[in-house]
Image 1 (tube, rainbow, N blue to C red):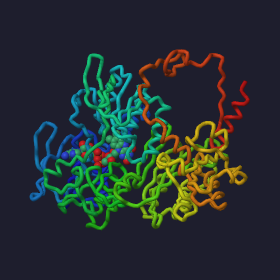
Image 2 (tube, rainbow, N blue to C red):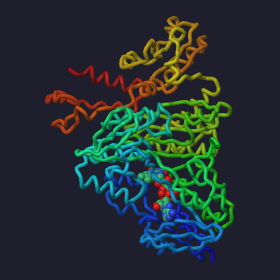
Image 3 (tube, helix red, strand yellow):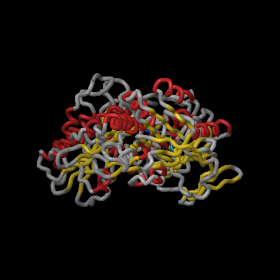
Image 4 (cartoon, helix red, strand yellow):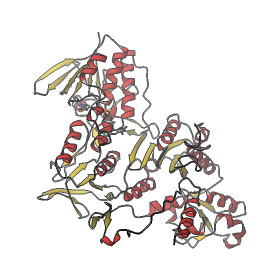
Length: 608
Ligand code: FAD
């Protein structure tokens, strides 16, 4: 009877154990977990802290008892595997009381996960500084908030977990300040897509500092001071440190298993380590990214769970199933926004020296004429040679999940922007449009790659010599009046055919509108009227504006007060609306440009 040992009892480990049992009823299966809990929902922890998940018990998918009853797996929680004797094929296990014993194996599976980074910053051991990895961390954070009068928290690091924590603490009425060393939040996104998240965070009264980092934590009588490199000091009641994780691979390292970048455990296509009797999976491994070929980490639950099944199959049936690598498909809710990413970003491709074209479109979550259609921005990167999709990022309010999954499906199968156009989707007005935004993104990419349209990007605009270039805003005068690119002229697309004589033939022409759609019509009018050096601004003014605005949101709590209406105001109390003021709701959702602005203007014109 074979004997299988598993190290780690959460995402990857628990899945492997369950599948092993389903494949082999006779095997002896022992799963070691250093902590108290197994098979719990780490992804749900921030939502339990924020009370969206109200019952703690809901976090536990299985218990050691239910594992035993249903799967006959011997779960040894609060026991840590501290050494592997590879030649003797046994492990040393340390119990909670410090005593040790050894256990032999035929096959060993390592799914030890990743641990939060805690760099040696002065003061980092302060008890007001928390990290979030597991249930005890969660209990500590929740307990601290409940027992102390926590008004303010600093979140260091604006990755997915940092932003989820920002939202959940904010939801509990705690003021949140985020400190991020990079120039943007959420590294899987490119800058202009992250800019949309920055602008959204501002509307939620979240304070955040970009391109700044913590120098030290200093405990004072009043609480904790977070001192930043910029010289700023943030007084706070607590700190959540979420600056990233690293593979929890010391056990593997000590056992002499081959490691890769950041000490991730190297595995082959069967998820076998450099020792054929030891398999590894989850956050602890490194594996070549299928798009770039570069050795990478994937700190995501989906891949860990799927790898668990593959490892069990390969152990029981002999190495037959190949692991193809993860394209890091991820999604997060950031207040009202949803942010999805799959494949690789433009900045990763640039760094890897892989040729690409990038394109941005803005669309609606569903048919504009059906109520509550909400904006959605899709950025894709693809190969200039054959249109193969290399990555996608989506920011929006509704339907981001399914579009991210559609792109992930295309990527996973090595398909192209041509295949994106052909995705057959379920359509009725409440759900999508007859051409889904993902189809549209593929069609726009087709126009670019096949020369129907040349595009320019928001960051290239600033480098242009305006002596040789004319920027033409083809939106209506009303839209133009609300903001445009400096130095541009305004010729609405519907007037363009009659005003061609105003446009110099010997200059580079850049057309733009809000999204890039009306300017595409303008582009086609111009090139078919004999203008040759014409370019359309990808993502239009919406992307340009959000990426070129101020990104950080500083000092918002320094001069604030709570108004009688319970809102937080800046400055003097006069900022309160007058008691006799009237609120007019304007439903401008789902309208095609320039619909929203025109609707707003019409309503304003009606006001006395
Ligand atoms: P884990 O699930 O972390 O399990 C590893 C376990 O091994 C740990 O419990 C550890 O105690 C145990 N262990 C380690 N060494 C030993 C040892 N020597 N002996 C005994 N036991 C040991 N991913 C998503 O895709 N979507 C999300 O929304 C998402 N949200 C997240 C939110 C939070 C707060 C966190 C912390 C993670 C989130 N993740 C999310 C990431 C996801 O949880 C991980 O990718 C996934 O759990 C990895 O599985 P794993 O088996 O590799 O490691």
